[in-house]
Length: 475
Image 1 (cartoon, rainbow, N blue to C red):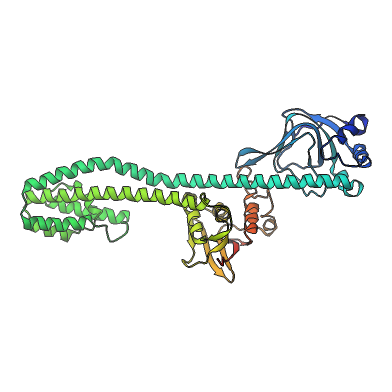
Image 2: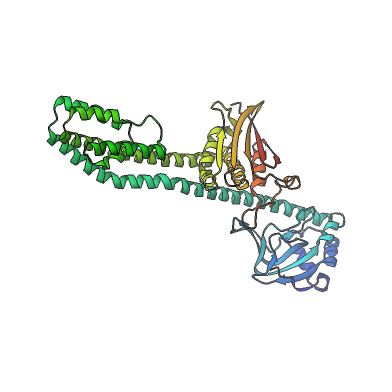
């Protein structure tokens, strides 16, 4: 809740105000005639610790000349508050000459008792003509404020991007990490079963020809299946078929699950059954199945570990954590692929399709890789927010003349024309309160500009496309 200025009174009624303004850091060199003009129109008062001067989204209608005390500006990013700026004795904030600020981007709260002189917006608008020296001093303060806010905004958005990366990484790491843990736990029991089966085969005293037939089938069992992955229905059918074969030969059908994951066929099993007695066949099949199970578990652990390694490598590439922030040839295809890997969990949560289409021979762009990946993170994340459950987000990249052009397209509801004009404005957002800061697209635009690129948007219901054009690297 905004607190009104306490003990508010005309500044000209305070006999010490001229001396206090003369000691003000920003106004020390301002002629007395201009100080008198400010005093004539100013209001003097104070705030107490904990008072709210302005809150996010409320109008900013006054210039605040801080005489003593401490005022802090707090920004809120995704529900997290962060101090962006401090004002103390001799500072100025609020509406400054030539400032386009209309509403507050955050909350300005008093840290300790603060005395100040205020001028309303109407008088501030008159200052360039009436007080040129004071105007010049305050414009410098406005430039410094803008620079501080810009650095704070970029830092906040970087933290938000890292938060999205961390969330994506946590989701993506969960499955392979769980698979590796589960496989490691099962492996000990599988090894014991394999050792027992090996002893049984040894006790069966197979002849050389019998052992050769078993080894031939076992080699097939240990091969990776020709098809990449069996569907659940295919796997169930194979397991049922093999279980029936085992039952018909009076063998334990618990081996069926392990054999169903291999390339072994019923014809292959019939072949080995023709050369072995029933007693020897049971030991041989058990040996084959346990060997397949151990190899399968080891393969699953290896795949899970590789997936973890790939994800960590993707994060390292996305953040460019080991690279200097200087323009260099950037592999956009790799950056887009890595970004999608970090946001895949969000697409799955909405059952949305998320694809990237970029040729392997895509020219490299000249830019700062970490900044460009932050752009992709913002655009793709926004596109996923825009689509309905089961929607589609497509990312394409290609060479067009002297540029590399990246397109992020979604089939969401679209952006109304009256909204599209403002989507790159700071603090503008169409998301619900607490769900967006209004800084993502503004910062994406700034980062594209700083990399000598251009960002545009076209939108209609069912098709919204953000285009980023970057210069091709000639290095």
